[in-house]
Length: 128
Image (cartoon, rainbow, N blue to C red; front, top):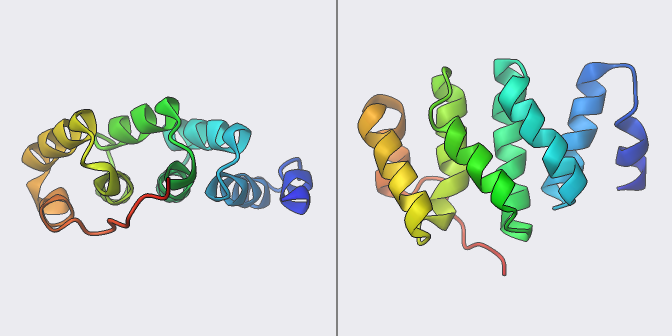
């Protein structure tokens, strides 16, 4: 993670973003906070990558800010980002608030979220 931390300050935005997302996947809170910003403000590709990284990071640390950001991403303008956010959250559908968000999003966007939510696509057992 030390190398990734140094790469986060690279002038190449794509490389810096990949480093941030790598650190987030490792469950590092500061990197996940930066990935939340990527999820909210990045390009479609970066938003989808951030949602995926945040989902992995969330399995390691249950940060409420990450949960809120992923729930908001269920309403992203991109169906790709919505689907990746749903895949990240479906592993935590035992949480009533997350389950309600997933169900609401499934009803609003059945074409891209119905299968993911109904079948639990992407669900893995969260690590304690």
